[in-house]
Length: 87
Image (cartoon, rainbow, N blue to C red; front, side):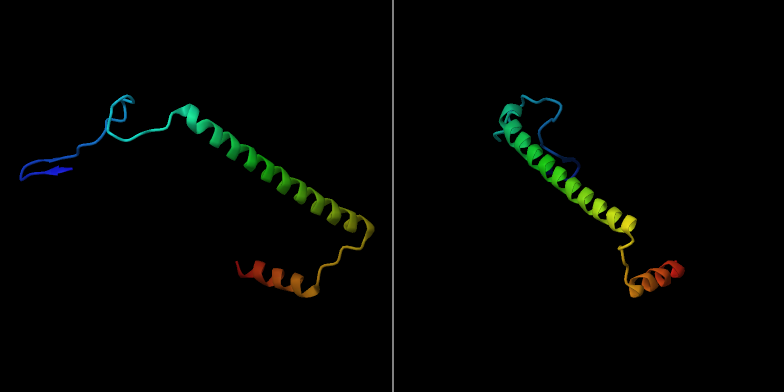
């Protein structure tokens, strides 16, 4: 950035011109793609694991509800009732 008494100019790279040399090395799309693809696969795997875990928990609760063995502590119910009436 250059500053004089009259004008303030910002000397930077024009982002609309991708081939402009600013002295900084930039990675190409093909260089970034493998890392991004690897990260996407990892995130997809985690997402699948979370979804499976939730489905297992949901099925356990359903099974307990249907058999009549699902129990919620009275203290938890009371707390939720009090909290819902405060809103």
